[in-house]
Length: 138
Image (tube, rainbow, N blue to C red; front, side, top):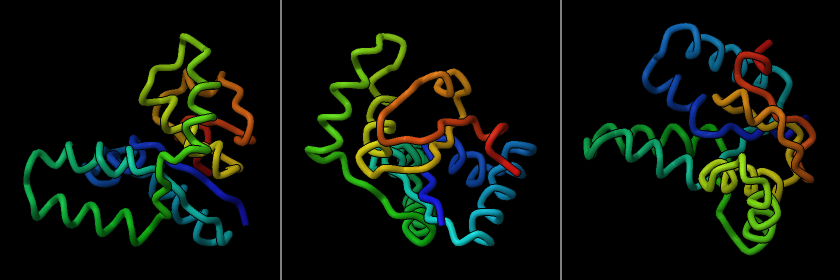
């Protein structure tokens, strides 16, 4: 069993049913379920998804329920804040990405899946691999 963290993008691809990217996210999730992998994300992902719902309470509630049913939602706590401070030393990593990476690193994940391929170049203690959805999907 692996611990796999999804940033916001794969969730948005599924929710918005964005063609090939949604298909890749679905395939990755099915592969994870077959393997018994744990899906993790952060409270930031939940907030970004809810913001994307644009005030549609029904959609927001469905999205929140779906995320909580599928994933463990990690807080941005003290341990993550310490990792955040380390990650932000790299000026190429923005604050929102650093929060996601910090939450994942604090949880010692095996794989961090992102919609942003440039993050794949980052090396973060506590994350074994960082891959774009395109490269992570089976």
